[in-house]
Image (cartoon, rainbow, N blue to C red; front, side, top):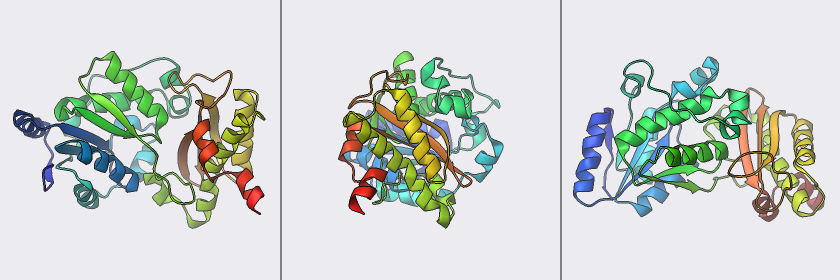
Length: 302
């Protein structure tokens, strides 16, 4: 591993650094981020640093994946702290480009994937252009960083599968590796957006993980016959907790189509607004059965 982190803002310089590392026989891992780093990002960087000689971390708030200008404007930015945190976690290079470096002509050729994978759930709520923006910026970042492996958090499950599809469809010479969602001890999935939660809203935010766990156990206990019933139960639990749910779904983890017969491998996903903040979370039903979260567990322990 390279001992100290180098900060680079130009793609051509990053490409030269990576080419030089490869000429010395070094392997390269890559962690793309939008900054506001937290322990979840640190887990990704540490995983890469343990597996590769050089880890590159990008810090870039990508405007093309926001459909709401207010959401883009409110996204937290803490570049200096992010660089320090990435370096401490094992980054050898921090790539911190500006918008003009990534989109020199104002708009890059768009990389687009169509079908249920990009047009449902997050794609429906945020617009299909959201995933166009994700795929487009990653195609640029993968090109300049040229990693052996890129690391993504499992919390953004739909995005993870979209990226895997893009890499497979474009025959890109890298592997995508997922790292398990990092959670606080009470079950809340770590997110840069958590910083924006009002103190009174944090308890309501726990309803995302608890509703997923409760529905997952109901499926495995045989009390939930189909995906529609799972969705209805999950939405009701979120509403009871004071959230404004956008969706709660039980899907096939590869196609993201509704799972007609939910079982241990079914992926449960939800999105909800908690106060002014939009949060997402997911669990497989198998994982849900193993957690200590859930409204049903609260009742058992009270």
